[in-house]
Length: 220
Image (cartoon, rainbow, N blue to C red; front, side, top):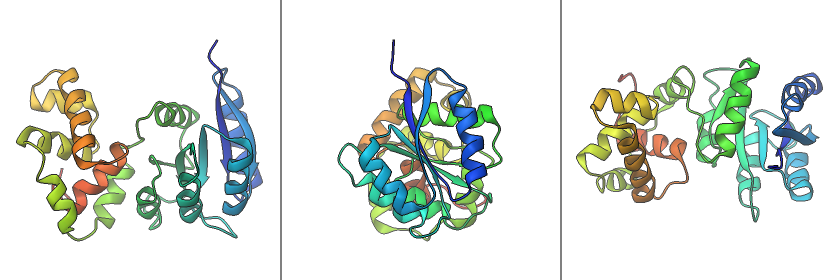
């Protein structure tokens, strides 16, 4: 039997942590191994408990979630990090993704969305919700970055189209439907894109797509 995914909760609100714990502990394949009320405690607990995934609030005392994420991901055998934010347009969320988080969820996400997000990130993919991450990137998209543009230039035309679809928040199935190709072909393209861009996951690829000007704010 596969061991459950070990989750560390990092949030400065005890009631919020209690709610997340209740939802997570209701699942046979997930377990909460610890809780932290600030970013520094999250870092210390990560070192001590070796969780598979940290559910990290963006705004916390002592050490905020952005810097905590950066430090957690610098640890040997680092866990995945899934960010939490109260506001859809939290100005810190993009910085958190750049710090290496594998995506983010709103705190008012449904239990089903939370559980799906944890499982998706643990499996090595990223959480990119069309109504959250895409809108955040649209509002906070950075100016064109020459380095990102050079990386994007290594992609084929089709790979660039797939990357643009990823940046718009489309799933592989949606990209396949719009480009009239097989879902398996899209999956192969996504793997090639991550390798060529030298990025960790789908979220990092989306950030680079905006930085490179593959898509711009407001485009759909």
